[in-house]
Amino acid sequence: MAGKRSSLLASSTGDGWHKVNWTARSLIAAGCVSVCLMMSALSATASIDRAAEKDAEAAALAEEAELVAGLADYLAAETANARAAFEAPKLKDARSTTEIVTREGAIADFVDFDFTQLVEARVDAEERKCLAQAIYYEAGTESRIGQMAVADVVLNRVKHPAYPDTICGVVYEGSHRKTGCQFTFTCDGALNRPVNKRRYEAAEELAGAILAGMRVPASRNATHYHADYVEPSWAHTLTPTATIGAHKFYRFPRRVEIAEAPATM
Image 1 (cartoon, helix red, strand yellow):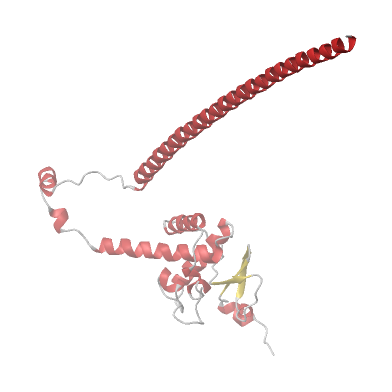
Image 2 (cartoon, rainbow, N blue to C red):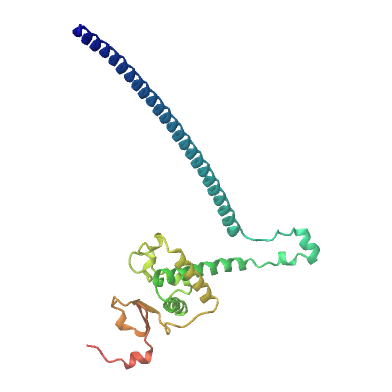
């Protein structure tokens, strides 16, 4: 009898525990599923939020790029307008012939106009250009007094009977020959190379000032010069006048100097 009770008790206990164990496992499984569903929902929400943030960033970048592009277009337009304003000649509207005749009462000025003035103006411009080139290519890196000394040599040659009587004639003398040019830059290809705009403009201004009368006899009547790192064969036949910067200057010896010169063997 006792044996049967033990068997029934064991059977009853085993069935109950089995049912309890199954229920617990079901609850745990349901909890895991719920957690998974919740995590999936949170992950999906986070993904949506990240996508929204990226879209917002992309929209902000696009808007910023549009603003920058608009600003660049505006600045380019303003720069072009400013350049055009600086480059455009500020001239008054031309008066009609009728208006001029009405105000002046005659057209004698038109009839008597001396067109040689135009030719002279063009020649003056060419002479200034040639002098500016000599200053720039021969002494562009020298001091202002050194540049004026080179210009002085050019003008001294213009006055000397042994040389052409124009600035361009002096500067370009012998330039058509491979050897024999008086100023090296006229026959060594230097004129084909790009120039330093700032220095060339300064040379043009100096040339204009010299031709307008601001001439300083810095070379002391020199008609020749050479760089201090060379010793040309003609140097010993002339009289030194000055050393300015990287150049040595010379003039033709006077008759008294030639007469007093010692005889050479």
